[in-house]
Length: 446
Image (cartoon, rainbow, N blue to C red; front, top):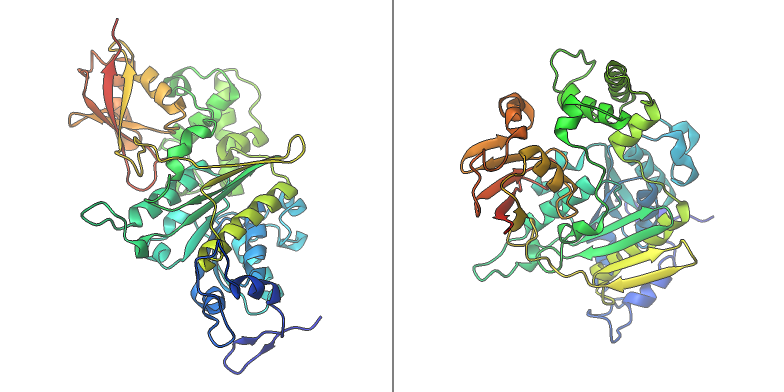
């Protein structure tokens, strides 16, 4: 196979005809196009794709491998990829950029090296870290971002960040130059979805949070005092065990990583000891991984379909060669092949792009622990470790203030002097950025 030749400047001189198919799109106008077609003398769009447009891919797993391959073969040459995970042997059946010799290595680094070697002229820069480790200036440099994540929490975070990066004028209109589109892809078995989010212009990820099934949660008081099932013991190790200074840990508890075998072994052993103390059977290493990582089944063909859709939208947004998705495509391959496209509308009470104030109907006799359990399981919020403040005082706090506020869990709202129309401030690790939910309490009428 003939390969492009490198010039003295280190740039690649492409083989003649390499991008013929792409040129057929960007060299021709059309009723759906919103651009000035390229010519041989002014190949502006082609130069933009290959030299100017910088793309970020978040995740180098099943979707990420497909995304990187598709972007590189669509002409994009300036790509960053972020993934904190390492390669496991179970990844090899579908994450095709990896080989057996790569097991244990960084997904981002191996995927980038593979693409750089295979697609001449393409430069993929890898980062083995959490997306939260990068600052706002890092994200501002991208033309668009594609997320191939299996974590709802991470998707909420990047969505919130991009919404907050948009500068709004005095009349509430977003400044176009500060808008970074987010293309979100997700798969689960034979099902998948692709979505285009234009921050401050379309609905955001948080607007449709209630469309995702809430992750299994358990009452904090049950986990802390009366565990009944193996999952309670694993959650106890995650929530309380990591903060317990009396438990020896071979790592910094603030840097717990559920992809680190040493950390997971400690979590498993701690949960197993907790289970034994309460005569509970069934805590296994595999179950511990499942609870800690919320493992989702993956099929290679579904990843390929969703990644292809995401990359098509990226190409259309960057080139303006056709109208992009407005704004959600659902795929279902369980019984044949079925797709459905519709527009998710912005939610007025969205914690990220809406008014940020929600009303919640309850009763003054509800205990704080029951209230915490209810809002954690509510599809609109899907909280993990919520902390609550009202009228300038702590109702219940996680972390260092847990011991000082845990006594409030069994008190009712009436006993805590939470009145109707009072506002409760809710913070949670699952909320993007430094956002908090402002909740107005409404008491049910008898």
